[in-house]
Image (cartoon, rainbow, N blue to C red; front, side, top):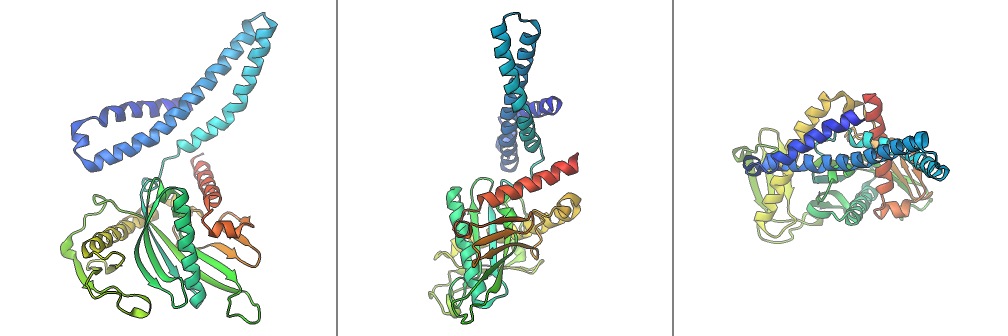
Length: 355
């Protein structure tokens, strides 16, 4: 462990030199990358210093026990030794987790797409519930949520909703939400009391920085339209809504959230870059056998990951076999416990693969 920490300390010293170099400061891409690495390594350095202090306390206590004649000093040293030996396994486990190579996308903002699946109106209502759940969770993390595009359901909720989430380590948390979410409940229109199952698909994409993707605007056809609401009726008469067509890939992006055409265009371009970046990320995933084997964050959009059962007040996380009888709190944004358990499972997979 100390050898690994020495390598990290050497790299930290290099970064401290690099981050003040004029050529790094003037290169936005390099400066952001170096700053992110500095932030991550600083956490390891702080935990490493704590580890070394505990090892020093252990060594000091052992020395006193071996060489001291004063019984009171020996007793104090024995207490110090016991404290150090109890603390070492936990801090070594913490360091192992910190030393796992981070996914470079974990620190990125995200674009989330929620699409109603099977279940008609109930699926649209459920998609709306998921959007509200992520919005409330984002508030607890002090992240900002910006709506990009919506297609409203006929009885509430959304057929599709696309939104950005901006903040610290957003993708590192929300990537675990990608997949098919199922809801089981008795709809208000159900007269026989039968439980119906509906579904919605959640897609979580790491948001591309401008320098992540080279976007040639000659490949993009811009269509300007009026904004539309439920049922397709026009919301206003100005051509503020934007639809982008990326000719080489066939990707289409719409944005009608803002009244300003320029703001809608900026948002739509951001989503387009993100979808193009996702194509590159997908190639990377396929080349990475470890990620392909991971059940926790495989990114498989067809995988059924979680069920919300209203009659039983139960939420089941299928990937790790976790069941919680706390549906009301969870659907109101309290999903941190689920994410923590998924992070733990993924880290355990990585540690097992590295051993």
